[in-house]
Length: 618
Image (tube, rainbow, N blue to C red; front, side):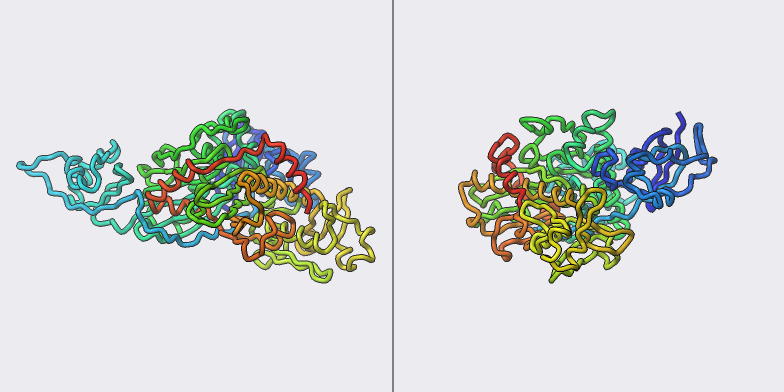
Protein backbone atom coordinates (compact mmCIF):
# COMPACT_ATOMS: atom_id res chain seq x y z
CA UNK A 1 0.00 0.00 0.00
CA UNK A 2 1.27 3.47 -0.91
CA UNK A 3 2.45 5.75 1.91
CA UNK A 4 2.13 9.52 1.73
CA UNK A 5 3.69 12.36 3.70
CA UNK A 6 1.33 14.81 5.42
CA UNK A 7 2.83 18.00 6.83
CA UNK A 8 0.89 20.13 9.30
CA UNK A 9 1.39 23.88 9.61
CA UNK A 10 2.12 26.09 11.50
CA UNK A 11 4.07 23.62 13.69
CA UNK A 12 5.68 21.72 10.82
CA UNK A 13 4.90 18.29 12.27
CA UNK A 14 4.78 15.40 9.80
CA UNK A 15 3.56 11.83 9.45
CA UNK A 16 3.67 9.10 6.82
CA UNK A 17 0.28 7.42 6.51
CA UNK A 18 -1.31 4.84 4.19
CA UNK A 19 -3.26 5.82 1.09
CA UNK A 20 -6.90 6.48 2.00
CA UNK A 21 -6.23 7.57 5.60
CA UNK A 22 -8.18 10.59 6.80
CA UNK A 23 -6.40 13.84 7.62
CA UNK A 24 -7.60 13.37 11.20
CA UNK A 25 -5.81 10.01 11.40
CA UNK A 26 -2.69 11.64 9.96
CA UNK A 27 -2.95 14.40 12.56
CA UNK A 28 -3.11 11.81 15.32
CA UNK A 29 -0.01 10.09 13.91
CA UNK A 30 1.83 13.43 13.83
CA UNK A 31 0.63 14.35 17.34
CA UNK A 32 -1.29 17.38 16.05
CA UNK A 33 -4.44 18.21 18.01
CA UNK A 34 -7.48 18.90 15.82
CA UNK A 35 -10.80 19.59 17.49
CA UNK A 36 -13.17 16.80 16.39
CA UNK A 37 -16.00 16.79 18.94
CA UNK A 38 -18.30 14.49 16.96
CA UNK A 39 -15.69 11.72 16.92
CA UNK A 40 -15.07 11.65 13.13
CA UNK A 41 -18.73 11.23 12.17
CA UNK A 42 -18.72 14.28 9.90
CA UNK A 43 -21.66 16.01 11.55
CA UNK A 44 -20.22 18.91 13.57
CA UNK A 45 -17.98 20.59 11.00
CA UNK A 46 -15.48 21.69 13.67
CA UNK A 47 -12.41 19.89 12.30
CA UNK A 48 -11.97 22.26 9.35
CA UNK A 49 -8.46 22.54 7.97
CA UNK A 50 -7.06 24.17 4.83
CA UNK A 51 -5.11 22.09 2.35
CA UNK A 52 -2.09 23.58 0.55
CA UNK A 53 -0.57 22.33 -2.69
CA UNK A 54 0.71 18.73 -2.76
CA UNK A 55 4.30 18.17 -1.71
CA UNK A 56 6.75 17.37 -4.55
CA UNK A 57 6.54 13.76 -5.65
CA UNK A 58 10.30 13.36 -5.09
CA UNK A 59 9.60 13.35 -1.35
CA UNK A 60 7.38 10.31 -1.63
CA UNK A 61 7.92 6.68 -0.91
CA UNK A 62 5.81 3.90 -2.31
CA UNK A 63 3.34 4.20 -5.12
CA UNK A 64 1.07 7.01 -6.11
CA UNK A 65 3.32 10.01 -5.47
CA UNK A 66 2.09 13.15 -7.17
CA UNK A 67 -1.38 13.71 -8.57
CA UNK A 68 -4.37 14.75 -6.47
CA UNK A 69 -3.46 15.16 -2.83
CA UNK A 70 -6.92 14.26 -1.51
CA UNK A 71 -9.95 12.36 -2.68
CA UNK A 72 -12.86 14.62 -3.78
CA UNK A 73 -15.08 16.10 -1.04
CA UNK A 74 -17.77 13.70 0.15
CA UNK A 75 -21.38 14.51 1.08
CA UNK A 76 -20.71 15.68 4.69
CA UNK A 77 -18.01 18.05 3.41
CA UNK A 78 -20.20 19.42 0.63
CA UNK A 79 -23.00 19.89 3.16
CA UNK A 80 -20.97 21.62 5.89
CA UNK A 81 -18.47 23.65 3.83
CA UNK A 82 -19.64 26.29 1.33
CA UNK A 83 -18.61 25.58 -2.28
CA UNK A 84 -16.46 28.71 -2.43
CA UNK A 85 -14.47 27.58 0.61
CA UNK A 86 -14.05 24.06 -0.78
CA UNK A 87 -12.35 25.65 -3.81
CA UNK A 88 -10.02 27.48 -1.38
CA UNK A 89 -8.86 24.16 0.06
CA UNK A 90 -11.02 23.96 3.19
CA UNK A 91 -11.83 20.36 4.14
CA UNK A 92 -13.09 18.35 7.13
CA UNK A 93 -10.13 16.52 8.65
CA UNK A 94 -12.32 13.61 9.72
CA UNK A 95 -13.67 13.07 6.18
CA UNK A 96 -10.94 14.13 3.72
CA UNK A 97 -8.97 11.08 2.58
CA UNK A 98 -5.37 11.21 1.46
CA UNK A 99 -4.35 10.34 -2.10
CA UNK A 100 -0.92 12.03 -2.24
CA UNK A 101 1.63 14.08 -0.34
CA UNK A 102 -0.01 17.15 1.14
CA UNK A 103 0.52 20.14 3.41
CA UNK A 104 -2.32 21.07 5.76
CA UNK A 105 -2.84 24.29 7.66
CA UNK A 106 -4.55 23.87 11.02
CA UNK A 107 -6.33 27.07 12.14
CA UNK A 108 -4.95 28.51 15.37
CA UNK A 109 -6.99 27.28 18.29
CA UNK A 110 -4.52 27.79 21.13
CA UNK A 111 -6.40 28.00 24.38
CA UNK A 112 -6.30 31.07 26.56
CA UNK A 113 -3.78 30.46 29.36
CA UNK A 114 -5.67 29.36 32.43
CA UNK A 115 -5.41 31.58 35.48
CA UNK A 116 -3.28 29.84 38.08
CA UNK A 117 -2.62 32.00 41.16
CA UNK A 118 0.70 31.88 42.97
CA UNK A 119 0.63 29.19 45.60
CA UNK A 120 0.99 30.12 49.25
CA UNK A 121 2.31 26.65 50.06
CA UNK A 122 5.52 26.36 52.04
CA UNK A 123 7.74 24.31 49.71
CA UNK A 124 8.45 20.80 50.99
CA UNK A 125 8.77 18.99 47.65
CA UNK A 126 9.63 15.36 47.10
CA UNK A 127 12.56 16.61 45.02
CA UNK A 128 15.73 17.44 46.95
CA UNK A 129 19.00 18.77 45.56
CA UNK A 130 22.13 18.48 47.69
CA UNK A 131 25.61 19.74 46.95
CA UNK A 132 28.29 17.18 47.90
CA UNK A 133 32.08 17.29 48.14
CA UNK A 134 33.14 13.67 48.29
CA UNK A 135 36.56 12.46 49.44
CA UNK A 136 38.52 11.11 46.50
CA UNK A 137 39.52 7.43 46.59
CA UNK A 138 42.87 6.51 48.14
CA UNK A 139 44.64 3.29 49.02
CA UNK A 140 43.48 3.88 52.58
CA UNK A 141 39.89 4.53 51.46
CA UNK A 142 39.09 2.59 48.25
CA UNK A 143 35.34 2.60 48.86
CA UNK A 144 33.15 2.15 45.77
CA UNK A 145 31.82 5.30 44.13
CA UNK A 146 28.18 4.40 44.86
CA UNK A 147 29.01 3.82 48.52
CA UNK A 148 30.67 7.24 48.71
CA UNK A 149 27.46 8.85 47.49
CA UNK A 150 25.32 6.80 49.90
CA UNK A 151 27.58 7.62 52.88
CA UNK A 152 27.38 11.34 52.11
CA UNK A 153 23.56 11.15 52.10
CA UNK A 154 23.13 8.63 54.93
CA UNK A 155 21.56 11.10 57.34
CA UNK A 156 19.30 12.93 54.87
CA UNK A 157 18.26 9.95 52.74
CA UNK A 158 18.88 6.57 54.37
CA UNK A 159 18.45 3.67 51.97
CA UNK A 160 19.21 5.71 48.85
CA UNK A 161 18.41 3.81 45.62
CA UNK A 162 20.71 4.26 42.62
CA UNK A 163 19.49 2.72 39.38
CA UNK A 164 21.71 1.25 36.68
CA UNK A 165 21.78 4.26 34.26
CA UNK A 166 23.17 6.50 37.01
CA UNK A 167 25.57 3.82 38.26
CA UNK A 168 26.99 3.77 34.73
CA UNK A 169 27.66 7.53 34.93
CA UNK A 170 29.59 7.44 38.19
CA UNK A 171 33.02 6.27 36.97
CA UNK A 172 33.25 9.10 34.41
CA UNK A 173 31.31 11.82 36.16
CA UNK A 174 32.95 11.78 39.62
CA UNK A 175 36.58 12.17 38.50
CA UNK A 176 35.59 14.75 35.86
CA UNK A 177 33.90 16.88 38.54
CA UNK A 178 36.74 16.29 41.03
CA UNK A 179 34.16 14.71 43.30
CA UNK A 180 32.38 18.07 43.58
CA UNK A 181 28.79 17.38 42.54
CA UNK A 182 25.09 17.93 43.15
CA UNK A 183 22.61 15.09 43.43
CA UNK A 184 18.87 15.29 42.83
CA UNK A 185 16.59 12.83 44.56
CA UNK A 186 12.86 12.16 44.56
CA UNK A 187 11.97 10.43 47.78
CA UNK A 188 14.69 7.84 48.34
CA UNK A 189 15.58 7.52 44.65
CA UNK A 190 18.54 9.21 42.95
CA UNK A 191 17.39 10.85 39.70
CA UNK A 192 20.32 13.08 38.65
CA UNK A 193 24.08 13.65 39.07
CA UNK A 194 25.40 17.09 38.11
CA UNK A 195 28.89 18.60 38.25
CA UNK A 196 29.47 21.45 40.68
CA UNK A 197 26.86 23.20 42.78
CA UNK A 198 23.52 23.28 40.92
CA UNK A 199 21.38 23.01 44.06
CA UNK A 200 19.59 26.28 43.26
CA UNK A 201 18.20 24.90 40.00
CA UNK A 202 15.32 22.55 40.77
CA UNK A 203 12.11 22.46 38.73
CA UNK A 204 8.86 20.54 38.50
CA UNK A 205 5.76 20.37 36.32
CA UNK A 206 2.13 20.43 37.49
CA UNK A 207 -0.45 19.27 34.94
CA UNK A 208 -4.23 19.50 34.81
CA UNK A 209 -5.12 16.89 32.18
CA UNK A 210 -8.65 17.82 31.21
CA UNK A 211 -10.89 16.04 28.75
CA UNK A 212 -10.87 19.08 26.48
CA UNK A 213 -7.85 21.13 27.50
CA UNK A 214 -4.51 20.52 29.18
CA UNK A 215 -2.81 23.07 31.42
CA UNK A 216 0.89 22.70 32.25
CA UNK A 217 2.54 24.82 34.97
CA UNK A 218 6.32 25.00 35.36
CA UNK A 219 7.54 25.70 38.88
CA UNK A 220 10.78 26.50 40.65
CA UNK A 221 10.64 24.01 43.51
CA UNK A 222 12.97 25.64 46.04
CA UNK A 223 10.89 28.79 46.38
CA UNK A 224 7.57 27.70 44.88
CA UNK A 225 7.59 30.31 42.10
CA UNK A 226 5.39 29.77 39.07
CA UNK A 227 7.62 30.28 36.03
CA UNK A 228 5.09 29.79 33.28
CA UNK A 229 1.70 28.39 32.27
CA UNK A 230 0.80 26.84 28.92
CA UNK A 231 -2.54 25.49 27.70
CA UNK A 232 -3.25 23.08 24.88
CA UNK A 233 -6.22 21.35 23.31
CA UNK A 234 -5.98 17.75 24.50
CA UNK A 235 -4.66 15.75 21.55
CA UNK A 236 -7.15 13.02 22.43
CA UNK A 237 -9.81 15.32 20.91
CA UNK A 238 -8.92 13.67 17.60
CA UNK A 239 -10.73 10.59 18.93
CA UNK A 240 -13.88 12.30 20.25
CA UNK A 241 -15.05 15.05 22.56
CA UNK A 242 -16.08 13.05 25.63
CA UNK A 243 -14.72 10.29 27.84
CA UNK A 244 -17.18 7.66 26.60
CA UNK A 245 -16.07 8.05 22.98
CA UNK A 246 -12.46 7.76 24.10
CA UNK A 247 -13.13 4.69 26.22
CA UNK A 248 -14.82 3.17 23.17
CA UNK A 249 -11.80 3.98 21.00
CA UNK A 250 -9.38 2.62 23.60
CA UNK A 251 -11.23 -0.66 23.96
CA UNK A 252 -12.42 -1.38 20.42
CA UNK A 253 -9.69 -0.11 18.11
CA UNK A 254 -6.35 -1.82 17.49
CA UNK A 255 -3.71 0.11 19.46
CA UNK A 256 -6.50 2.47 20.62
CA UNK A 257 -5.26 2.65 24.19
CA UNK A 258 -1.69 3.30 23.05
CA UNK A 259 -2.91 6.04 20.71
CA UNK A 260 -4.79 7.84 23.48
CA UNK A 261 -1.94 7.49 25.96
CA UNK A 262 0.49 8.85 23.39
CA UNK A 263 -1.84 11.74 22.52
CA UNK A 264 -2.11 12.82 26.16
CA UNK A 265 1.63 12.64 26.74
CA UNK A 266 2.41 14.41 23.46
CA UNK A 267 0.08 17.26 24.44
CA UNK A 268 1.86 17.69 27.76
CA UNK A 269 5.27 17.47 26.08
CA UNK A 270 4.26 20.16 23.58
CA UNK A 271 3.27 22.52 26.41
CA UNK A 272 6.48 21.66 28.29
CA UNK A 273 8.63 22.35 25.22
CA UNK A 274 7.13 25.84 24.97
CA UNK A 275 7.67 26.48 28.68
CA UNK A 276 11.30 25.38 28.52
CA UNK A 277 11.92 27.50 25.43
CA UNK A 278 10.42 30.59 27.08
CA UNK A 279 12.29 30.15 30.36
CA UNK A 280 15.59 28.73 29.09
CA UNK A 281 15.41 25.90 31.61
CA UNK A 282 17.13 22.57 30.92
CA UNK A 283 14.57 19.74 30.78
CA UNK A 284 17.12 17.52 32.57
CA UNK A 285 16.54 19.72 35.63
CA UNK A 286 12.78 19.12 35.65
CA UNK A 287 12.78 16.21 38.08
CA UNK A 288 9.13 15.53 38.83
CA UNK A 289 5.63 16.01 37.40
CA UNK A 290 2.32 15.86 39.28
CA UNK A 291 -0.70 15.12 37.09
CA UNK A 292 -4.40 15.42 37.92
CA UNK A 293 -7.44 14.59 35.80
CA UNK A 294 -10.76 12.80 35.91
CA UNK A 295 -10.59 9.04 36.41
CA UNK A 296 -10.77 8.28 32.69
CA UNK A 297 -7.99 10.77 31.84
CA UNK A 298 -5.94 9.30 34.70
CA UNK A 299 -6.29 5.78 33.30
CA UNK A 300 -5.56 6.80 29.71
CA UNK A 301 -2.51 8.84 30.74
CA UNK A 302 -1.09 5.85 32.61
CA UNK A 303 -1.97 3.47 29.76
CA UNK A 304 -4.46 1.54 31.91
CA UNK A 305 -7.48 0.01 30.16
CA UNK A 306 -10.50 2.16 31.18
CA UNK A 307 -13.19 -0.31 30.07
CA UNK A 308 -14.49 -0.88 33.62
CA UNK A 309 -15.42 2.82 33.82
CA UNK A 310 -17.92 2.57 30.97
CA UNK A 311 -20.55 0.38 32.65
CA UNK A 312 -21.99 -0.26 36.11
CA UNK A 313 -20.60 -0.33 38.73
CA UNK A 314 -18.17 2.15 37.04
CA UNK A 315 -15.18 0.76 38.87
CA UNK A 316 -11.72 2.32 38.37
CA UNK A 317 -8.74 0.00 38.04
CA UNK A 318 -6.80 2.15 40.49
CA UNK A 319 -7.84 4.93 42.86
CA UNK A 320 -4.61 5.24 44.87
CA UNK A 321 -1.81 7.64 43.93
CA UNK A 322 0.55 6.25 41.31
CA UNK A 323 4.26 7.02 41.13
CA UNK A 324 6.37 5.93 38.15
CA UNK A 325 9.35 6.99 36.08
CA UNK A 326 8.88 9.66 33.44
CA UNK A 327 10.59 7.42 30.88
CA UNK A 328 7.93 4.73 31.40
CA UNK A 329 5.27 7.16 30.15
CA UNK A 330 7.32 9.07 27.59
CA UNK A 331 7.04 12.34 29.50
CA UNK A 332 9.90 14.57 28.37
CA UNK A 333 11.27 15.69 31.74
CA UNK A 334 14.47 14.15 33.16
CA UNK A 335 14.01 10.51 32.08
CA UNK A 336 14.99 9.28 35.57
CA UNK A 337 12.55 11.79 37.09
CA UNK A 338 9.25 10.74 38.58
CA UNK A 339 5.58 11.24 37.72
CA UNK A 340 3.02 11.30 40.52
CA UNK A 341 -0.75 11.18 40.01
CA UNK A 342 -3.10 12.21 42.80
CA UNK A 343 -5.75 9.69 43.93
CA UNK A 344 -9.18 9.28 42.36
CA UNK A 345 -12.43 9.23 44.34
CA UNK A 346 -14.69 7.11 42.11
CA UNK A 347 -15.41 6.05 38.54
CA UNK A 348 -15.94 9.55 37.15
CA UNK A 349 -14.77 11.68 40.05
CA UNK A 350 -11.03 11.82 39.72
CA UNK A 351 -7.91 13.42 41.04
CA UNK A 352 -8.86 16.77 39.49
CA UNK A 353 -11.77 16.95 41.95
CA UNK A 354 -9.43 16.01 44.80
CA UNK A 355 -7.19 18.86 43.63
CA UNK A 356 -10.14 21.31 43.60
CA UNK A 357 -11.01 20.38 47.19
CA UNK A 358 -7.36 20.72 48.21
CA UNK A 359 -6.97 24.12 46.55
CA UNK A 360 -10.21 25.57 47.94
CA UNK A 361 -9.70 24.00 51.42
CA UNK A 362 -13.33 22.86 51.49
CA UNK A 363 -12.24 19.93 53.65
CA UNK A 364 -11.01 22.31 56.37
CA UNK A 365 -13.74 24.95 56.44
CA UNK A 366 -16.79 25.15 58.71
CA UNK A 367 -19.23 26.84 56.26
CA UNK A 368 -20.94 24.57 53.76
CA UNK A 369 -19.82 25.39 50.23
CA UNK A 370 -20.66 24.11 46.78
CA UNK A 371 -17.88 23.67 44.18
CA UNK A 372 -18.70 23.06 40.52
CA UNK A 373 -15.98 22.19 38.01
CA UNK A 374 -17.69 23.22 34.79
CA UNK A 375 -16.26 21.13 31.99
CA UNK A 376 -17.11 18.28 29.66
CA UNK A 377 -17.40 16.07 32.71
CA UNK A 378 -19.07 18.24 35.36
CA UNK A 379 -17.88 17.36 38.88
CA UNK A 380 -19.74 18.75 41.88
CA UNK A 381 -18.65 18.85 45.55
CA UNK A 382 -20.84 19.87 48.51
CA UNK A 383 -19.87 20.11 52.15
CA UNK A 384 -17.35 21.21 54.73
CA UNK A 385 -14.77 19.74 57.13
CA UNK A 386 -17.30 17.35 58.62
CA UNK A 387 -18.66 15.84 55.43
CA UNK A 388 -17.99 16.08 51.70
CA UNK A 389 -20.29 14.68 49.00
CA UNK A 390 -19.25 14.37 45.35
CA UNK A 391 -20.89 13.43 42.08
CA UNK A 392 -20.23 13.63 38.36
CA UNK A 393 -22.66 14.60 35.62
CA UNK A 394 -22.26 14.16 31.87
CA UNK A 395 -22.60 17.85 31.06
CA UNK A 396 -21.10 17.40 27.60
CA UNK A 397 -18.77 19.83 25.83
CA UNK A 398 -21.22 22.72 25.29
CA UNK A 399 -19.48 24.80 27.99
CA UNK A 400 -16.29 24.47 25.92
CA UNK A 401 -18.03 25.65 22.75
CA UNK A 402 -18.26 22.17 21.22
CA UNK A 403 -21.42 20.82 19.56
CA UNK A 404 -22.50 24.45 19.13
CA UNK A 405 -22.97 25.45 15.47
CA UNK A 406 -20.87 28.62 15.80
CA UNK A 407 -19.09 27.39 18.91
CA UNK A 408 -15.36 27.61 19.46
CA UNK A 409 -12.90 27.69 22.31
CA UNK A 410 -11.92 30.85 24.13
CA UNK A 411 -9.50 32.09 21.49
CA UNK A 412 -9.14 35.15 19.31
CA UNK A 413 -12.36 35.86 17.45
CA UNK A 414 -14.64 34.22 20.01
CA UNK A 415 -17.55 36.17 21.48
CA UNK A 416 -16.96 35.97 25.23
CA UNK A 417 -19.59 38.41 26.55
CA UNK A 418 -23.06 39.42 25.33
CA UNK A 419 -25.45 42.21 26.41
CA UNK A 420 -28.88 43.10 25.09
CA UNK A 421 -29.81 46.68 25.96
CA UNK A 422 -33.03 48.23 24.64
CA UNK A 423 -32.98 45.94 21.63
CA UNK A 424 -29.32 46.53 20.86
CA UNK A 425 -27.09 43.44 20.96
CA UNK A 426 -23.55 44.16 22.06
CA UNK A 427 -20.72 41.64 22.14
CA UNK A 428 -17.17 41.53 23.44
CA UNK A 429 -14.79 39.51 21.27
CA UNK A 430 -11.48 38.05 22.41
CA UNK A 431 -8.66 39.94 20.70
CA UNK A 432 -10.97 42.79 19.68
CA UNK A 433 -11.27 41.36 16.15
CA UNK A 434 -14.32 40.49 14.01
CA UNK A 435 -16.36 37.71 15.61
CA UNK A 436 -16.04 34.27 14.03
CA UNK A 437 -17.78 32.22 16.74
CA UNK A 438 -18.88 32.06 20.35
CA UNK A 439 -17.17 30.39 23.33
CA UNK A 440 -18.81 28.97 26.45
CA UNK A 441 -19.03 32.18 28.49
CA UNK A 442 -20.50 34.03 25.52
CA UNK A 443 -23.01 31.24 24.96
CA UNK A 444 -24.16 31.43 28.57
CA UNK A 445 -24.44 35.23 28.42
CA UNK A 446 -26.33 35.10 25.13
CA UNK A 447 -28.94 32.62 26.36
CA UNK A 448 -29.42 34.53 29.62
CA UNK A 449 -29.83 37.83 27.75
CA UNK A 450 -32.13 36.31 25.14
CA UNK A 451 -34.31 34.85 27.88
CA UNK A 452 -34.41 38.18 29.71
CA UNK A 453 -35.26 40.14 26.55
CA UNK A 454 -38.14 37.83 25.56
CA UNK A 455 -36.49 36.21 22.55
CA UNK A 456 -36.61 32.86 24.35
CA UNK A 457 -39.45 31.43 26.39
CA UNK A 458 -39.04 29.51 29.64
CA UNK A 459 -38.82 26.21 27.83
CA UNK A 460 -35.88 27.42 25.77
CA UNK A 461 -37.89 27.87 22.57
CA UNK A 462 -36.76 30.62 20.19
CA UNK A 463 -39.76 32.72 19.27
CA UNK A 464 -40.30 33.46 15.59
CA UNK A 465 -39.94 36.96 14.16
CA UNK A 466 -43.62 36.91 13.21
CA UNK A 467 -44.68 36.12 16.78
CA UNK A 468 -42.71 38.94 18.41
CA UNK A 469 -43.05 41.56 15.64
CA UNK A 470 -44.55 44.64 17.22
CA UNK A 471 -43.85 43.28 20.70
CA UNK A 472 -40.05 43.44 20.82
CA UNK A 473 -37.80 46.22 19.47
CA UNK A 474 -37.42 45.99 15.65
CA UNK A 475 -33.61 45.65 15.88
CA UNK A 476 -34.10 42.54 18.01
CA UNK A 477 -36.78 41.09 15.75
CA UNK A 478 -34.45 41.46 12.73
CA UNK A 479 -31.98 39.12 14.39
CA UNK A 480 -34.45 36.24 14.47
CA UNK A 481 -33.78 34.24 11.31
CA UNK A 482 -34.68 30.92 9.79
CA UNK A 483 -32.25 29.00 7.59
CA UNK A 484 -32.75 25.50 6.18
CA UNK A 485 -35.71 24.96 8.48
CA UNK A 486 -33.75 25.92 11.62
CA UNK A 487 -34.55 28.91 13.83
CA UNK A 488 -31.64 31.09 14.85
CA UNK A 489 -30.62 34.35 16.49
CA UNK A 490 -27.85 36.49 14.99
CA UNK A 491 -25.29 37.51 17.61
CA UNK A 492 -22.90 39.29 15.25
CA UNK A 493 -22.84 40.14 11.55
CA UNK A 494 -19.10 40.77 11.29
CA UNK A 495 -16.55 38.35 9.89
CA UNK A 496 -16.88 35.66 7.22
CA UNK A 497 -20.50 34.98 7.97
CA UNK A 498 -22.99 35.85 10.71
CA UNK A 499 -22.46 34.24 14.11
CA UNK A 500 -25.82 32.62 14.77
CA UNK A 501 -27.17 30.68 17.75
CA UNK A 502 -29.62 28.02 16.60
CA UNK A 503 -32.42 26.29 18.41
CA UNK A 504 -30.20 23.20 18.57
CA UNK A 505 -27.43 25.20 20.25
CA UNK A 506 -29.80 26.36 22.95
CA UNK A 507 -30.93 22.76 23.53
CA UNK A 508 -27.30 21.69 23.97
CA UNK A 509 -26.81 24.32 26.68
CA UNK A 510 -30.07 23.29 28.34
CA UNK A 511 -28.90 19.67 28.51
CA UNK A 512 -25.58 20.69 30.08
CA UNK A 513 -27.28 23.08 32.48
CA UNK A 514 -29.95 20.52 33.44
CA UNK A 515 -27.33 17.87 34.22
CA UNK A 516 -25.36 20.20 36.51
CA UNK A 517 -28.40 21.57 38.33
CA UNK A 518 -29.92 18.10 38.84
CA UNK A 519 -26.61 16.89 40.28
CA UNK A 520 -26.67 19.80 42.73
CA UNK A 521 -30.24 18.89 43.72
CA UNK A 522 -29.26 15.29 44.51
CA UNK A 523 -26.27 16.31 46.64
CA UNK A 524 -28.43 18.76 48.61
CA UNK A 525 -31.00 16.03 49.12
CA UNK A 526 -28.37 13.54 50.33
CA UNK A 527 -26.82 16.12 52.64
CA UNK A 528 -30.22 16.99 54.08
CA UNK A 529 -29.96 20.75 53.51
CA UNK A 530 -31.60 23.43 51.37
CA UNK A 531 -30.10 25.76 48.76
CA UNK A 532 -30.13 28.61 51.28
CA UNK A 533 -27.78 26.67 53.57
CA UNK A 534 -24.97 27.05 51.02
CA UNK A 535 -22.70 29.91 52.06
CA UNK A 536 -20.75 30.13 48.81
CA UNK A 537 -20.70 28.67 45.30
CA UNK A 538 -17.26 28.13 43.79
CA UNK A 539 -17.05 27.96 39.98
CA UNK A 540 -13.91 26.12 38.91
CA UNK A 541 -12.36 25.13 35.60
CA UNK A 542 -11.39 27.06 32.48
CA UNK A 543 -15.04 27.87 31.78
CA UNK A 544 -15.79 28.68 35.41
CA UNK A 545 -12.98 31.25 35.36
CA UNK A 546 -14.74 33.43 32.81
CA UNK A 547 -18.44 32.77 33.29
CA UNK A 548 -20.62 35.68 34.37
CA UNK A 549 -22.19 34.59 37.69
CA UNK A 550 -25.29 36.67 36.94
CA UNK A 551 -25.84 34.76 33.70
CA UNK A 552 -25.27 31.41 35.41
CA UNK A 553 -27.86 32.31 38.02
CA UNK A 554 -30.30 33.78 35.48
CA UNK A 555 -30.65 30.53 33.49
CA UNK A 556 -30.72 28.37 36.64
CA UNK A 557 -27.29 26.77 36.24
CA UNK A 558 -26.56 27.53 39.91
CA UNK A 559 -28.83 28.05 42.92
CA UNK A 560 -30.22 31.60 43.29
CA UNK A 561 -27.73 32.85 45.86
CA UNK A 562 -26.70 36.53 45.97
CA UNK A 563 -24.11 37.32 43.31
CA UNK A 564 -21.46 38.15 45.91
CA UNK A 565 -21.69 34.54 47.13
CA UNK A 566 -20.80 33.12 43.71
CA UNK A 567 -17.03 33.07 43.21
CA UNK A 568 -14.88 32.09 40.23
CA UNK A 569 -11.84 30.26 41.61
CA UNK A 570 -9.98 29.78 38.33
CA UNK A 571 -8.17 26.58 37.52
CA UNK A 572 -8.48 25.11 41.00
CA UNK A 573 -7.53 21.65 39.74
CA UNK A 574 -4.28 23.05 38.36
CA UNK A 575 -3.66 24.91 41.60
CA UNK A 576 -4.21 21.68 43.55
CA UNK A 577 -1.64 19.97 41.32
CA UNK A 578 0.79 22.81 42.07
CA UNK A 579 0.23 22.38 45.80
CA UNK A 580 0.86 18.63 45.62
CA UNK A 581 4.02 19.20 43.57
CA UNK A 582 5.35 21.61 46.18
CA UNK A 583 4.47 19.64 49.30
CA UNK A 584 4.60 15.95 50.19
CA UNK A 585 2.50 16.78 53.24
CA UNK A 586 -0.29 18.02 50.99
CA UNK A 587 -0.10 14.78 49.00
CA UNK A 588 -0.99 12.97 52.20
CA UNK A 589 -3.79 15.46 52.70
CA UNK A 590 -5.05 14.74 49.18
CA UNK A 591 -5.09 11.01 49.92
CA UNK A 592 -7.14 11.66 53.05
CA UNK A 593 -9.61 13.74 50.99
CA UNK A 594 -10.03 10.92 48.47
CA UNK A 595 -10.61 8.33 51.20
CA UNK A 596 -13.11 10.41 53.19
CA UNK A 597 -15.20 11.98 50.41
CA UNK A 598 -18.55 10.24 49.82
CA UNK A 599 -19.42 9.58 46.18
CA UNK A 600 -23.06 9.73 45.07
CA UNK A 601 -23.69 7.73 41.88
CA UNK A 602 -26.40 9.42 39.81
CA UNK A 603 -26.84 7.02 36.91
CA UNK A 604 -29.28 4.63 38.59
CA UNK A 605 -31.35 7.24 40.44
CA UNK A 606 -34.82 7.94 39.11
CA UNK A 607 -34.99 11.16 41.14
CA UNK A 608 -31.96 12.46 39.23
CA UNK A 609 -33.63 11.83 35.87
CA UNK A 610 -36.88 13.41 37.06
CA UNK A 611 -35.02 16.45 38.33
CA UNK A 612 -32.94 16.65 35.14
CA UNK A 613 -36.10 16.96 33.02
CA UNK A 614 -37.44 19.64 35.36
CA UNK A 615 -34.15 21.57 35.29
CA UNK A 616 -34.07 21.85 31.51
CA UNK A 617 -36.25 24.96 31.82
CA UNK A 618 -34.54 28.34 31.70
